Image (cartoon, rainbow over all chains, first blue to last red; front, top):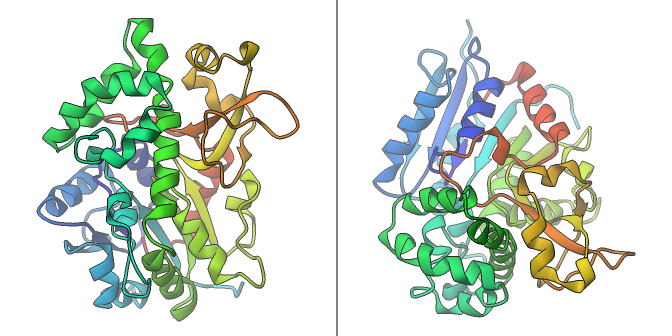
Length: 85
Length: 272
């Protein structure tokens, strides 16, 4: 889950590239505000090898952190399980 | 902590603290909303920041250059800060060393004055740690301690989530570990006092070697400039990274042990 950051920090992208396994399924919720959200997702997808399909399912929320929680979108993240291989 | 909890990695940036209020808190103090990078030096838009900035003449000087860049919006401010941080002229680079203490004090005051309680972070930790319990790695880019406050409130009786020493953030067995890549408002290193000349002492600092020194966790410091280390007369200097464009691995100021914990976390990760 990524909340409220631009994806411009190379140190974060490098760490995520090390941290997120490329051989396992994962699920990403990106929570941002406004029109920049798509660009933010593009930056993460470009900078982190594991952020590619089919290993990762992605959802983008562009209404901000407070609305993301208030509308219970977070339950989709917390209840996600990898599908059987 | 039960075995075989699903794992979740949560990355938290400035937009999360900026949007931290919800209806569970009685009020907000709008002028002190936790800032985004574009707000930090836009004193025209945020005149309430001026008394904090004026404590740091070097930061105030450079703010005259950074303010118009801030006001343009976008990510130009990160580029401008980078140019100043690595400036060839020591008259600029020495004054740049006063920017982290300014940012630290600013974030301290915004995080204390905006809302009485970090509502959305509390919602987040309830969802992730209790409603559907996960083992969580928080990778935090913010300097504020709002997430730590939320975790502390969750376990206020058991004191499971205390952050009094630097290793507490990654304490083994905790359901949630917190790695603050760019430092924290309550992290300090010791700085020689140079006959009580704070500006000189700060100008002599090599920011690139900050993390070679032990990091002390010291809560509720209202003014980094006047704070002295416990049990000595030495100054303290905040351990935070200015928001520089394209921050590389050298911008990471948290201890190497914290980074290693983050890397080890993914071994059997299911979510990301």
